[in-house]
Image (cartoon, rainbow, N blue to C red; front, side):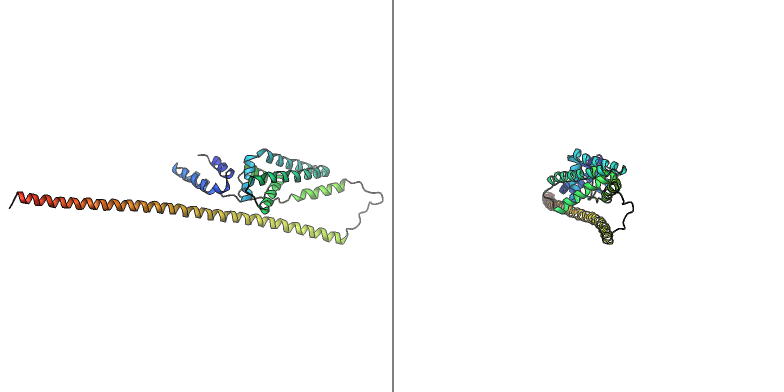
Length: 272
């Protein structure tokens, strides 16, 4: 049994089958005498719904996902070249492609909520923005959704580059001081972005904790079911053992009676 094959089987398969299939593979590894493999498989966590949908996309439609991630490579190149025009063009393509792939992901699930689909979109955005996140998504073994932290900085760079590329108007060499109201608005926007980033991080942590709690609850339920099955089997064995004991007692009683009858017969034939 191969760990990677088992992991792919679990994360590519139906989310509801994750726990029972994992437990079955753990039992098979133990039966084969591979305790280390059993521990590695047992440590795999059940994915959240959003993560499960992205995992299915990675396994069932890898080309669509790869195309989206390649767009991220182009955006990073444009960002490095300070090519604001190219970056704005790619940003428009990104929105279109994310929507398209998100619709594909939506078709994989059983009527996912908007909150779940938002997490899917965030995960796709993260895969575009960050090569490490892209590698996680492509592997198709996500346990929780990802947050697209830092992606909006590209958009800011795009605007700044566009401003630097604009020719200055005659007689306007000296920049005017920033409008206090505009500056205050920009500060509020920056603060709101920081709060959003923090909230997204907290949401990701909470989602991970929820997934682990649900996983633990499901595992506990499975253990209860296993114990119930073991108890039922033990009760059946107990009934069989008791039946066998009663049958043995009847045979013993019959043997005792036979011995007594034989002794009486012998005594009649050999009077003292």
